[in-house]
View 1: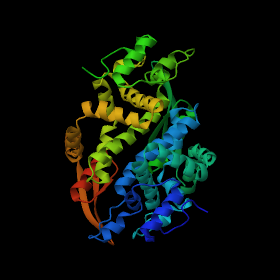
View 2 (view 1 turned 90 degrees about the vertical axis):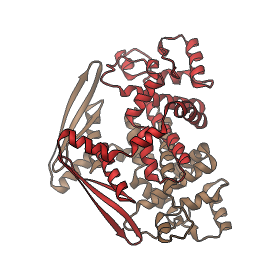
View 3 (view 1 turned 120 degrees about the vertical axis):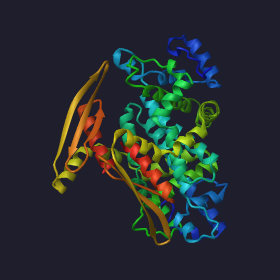
View 4 (view 1 turned 135 degrees about the vertical axis):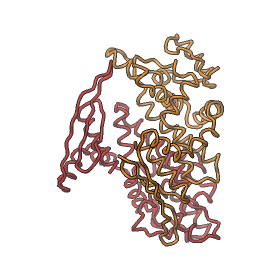
Length: 235
Length: 235
């Protein structure tokens, strides 16, 4: 059963909302208004001008940053011997729109959300709601409890780090597959750059119909991976 | 006098380092190794293979995320009636490479850094060191004290929010200046979009030699500002 159990939160009475939150979050929330706001998509507010509801967009802004910190520290501690390039990449994978959307559905948070938007068009509203929830927890209970919730309730049960790692290093093969399926050409051109005491590798990636991409890294392989990763980020 | 007083930290004895940090940070650090690491540029480590020094790159990764959170919350609380678009823009201004580099020099942190890099080429090492310091403080003393340091010691004395706000809204004029100086043409083309109950403005910005940029906002002006901002972010 998923953490949030597919409950239609926004239809519950205040009393049931409070019980549900307590069970799901594993702590006693104080300011329930914040959670109501986290689960309110802007479409509900826009549809009803006279409503006193507030949408989750500001909480999403805050939660996005808090989640970014928590995930950064999680990987910082988990991989003490990996460099910042590795940490940046694996973090960006976990906080990506796609991953967070899927995660929100996996934990069953999707049914908590009150929305009148066309869900086929905007699946990212689930990931946004997850970030808004993190913002609400942070404001309600502080950084340490928020971190504990993310690490113990979310990452532990719903994130497969090995799978993240496996997909994380495959940008070059992903690019090769992509170009083959689209029948477009590509070229990696990598050179070593030395400036004074610094040495690094610079990879220029040319994909047909796209602007050139430059990736850098402390090995040829890393520079190419970085260029391929940037290609997917951009296009 | 600047906060960090132009002290050549890395030349001090351990005892003097501890006294200096106490005075500058306003609290008693526990793990001094973290601060030594924050002030060690990778060039010092790369130049000396036998050195047991660790560079500040991993701490910079962590500090970048922590700083992003602290600044996000700072603006979230300071501007309770602004939307997430406004908050995103003003935050990205404060955590930009340029701003952090200048800030690090303003607070006198530049002389704390041990480096053998060519400083004319890589001014961003100062901003990086500032982020690494934030990472060190976070690991040493936790989130709340780290936030207090940033808000009370840095933002209060060294960040002019009004100036940030003023520069923040000028992307369109910046674009016009830019295109005039480069003698290239540009065109803003803005339309109102209505889908069901949602209404917003969509601005297509065409700048000669560049891919078209699309900005969105809840007014024509905001959509154009957003497109111009994205242009500078991209090129």
